Image (tube, rainbow, N blue to C red; front, top):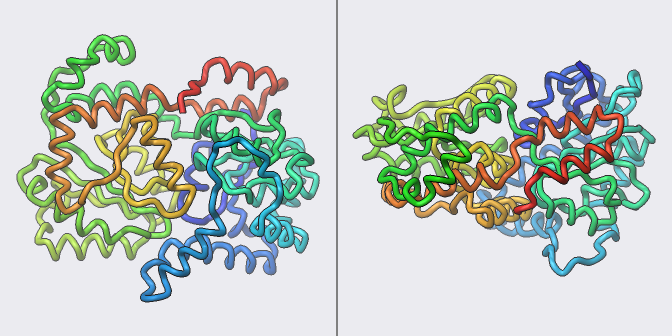
Length: 438
């Protein structure tokens, strides 16, 4: 099997989740640029500062009085301009110049130098700073997976027209954004987001089994029966099981407290067996403990292992594997619009809590534009609005819209590009088959 250097960073879940599907081609598995043994101690200190800002800012709103002010200040730095009108945004920003200065002092050098032991292998990274450092140091064949639908100017080099990074983008609008920043069009490939391959392979079967539950009274199937048969094959008329909702907290632990309202809103439906709730804390033990305390407070302990299931894992690899398996049994994914905004491509409707930052706002807009999900209503009344959306077919429509309109083959497309002798031909092939619907 062909191999590549696969590099992510340990900041939240997004960059490692995007790298996880490539663990089979990683020359040394998946390397984490900020925690790997090869990282210079001085450089590691800079990464710790970077990580503290990256993850800590997600929780800064909770700080009394000054929290909202700190968040607004940070959010201005990561702001993203409107897409239209199309214009030249290639001038470096404060953030991109700051990152360039850090790299001039060696930030990112350790990983790049480590990969020179096999410079014949392409470098695939899911974090912009690693790609920019590789480009600055003259590393050939650097590929950067873009993990959101829109990005800040910091993702591109100080002088983008001189850069040699190959960007692998999840949407056509992401491609346009990088072109606005001055990245040459021939360096930007629309591939789709890298989803777990096992889930991609089972997506049609899982959606067939999901639709009868999401479309409780058959309203969606009556209107779209022929299209569904053509796209998915025969769909069971009924499947007798509870509606399965997965509530997943982000890697920084932000929005864990929302679970209290979610549990409150679903309590009656959990007790009578109409719904099932999967609470996903990932690797954060404090979030798992909060979930358990909240369940006890609401006197729902007897539902653990029945209508309530808890997913907590000691490592991110174990978490990703268990989460991907859980998705096959999930009817609705409820989370903030992070990198999980691409998972409706698997035929899972998305319920989105409040976005954190400009990139998540754009992710939310993209999902709504496609029709693959909804903003959450009052979570304390979740049982009511979810039941309504089950009965009127809205959730089934969202599931099918995501499945039909969002590309699923990002992992396969990226692997093709990495190892193709003629990447321009692969890019032409992808352009001919990928949907430019969003």
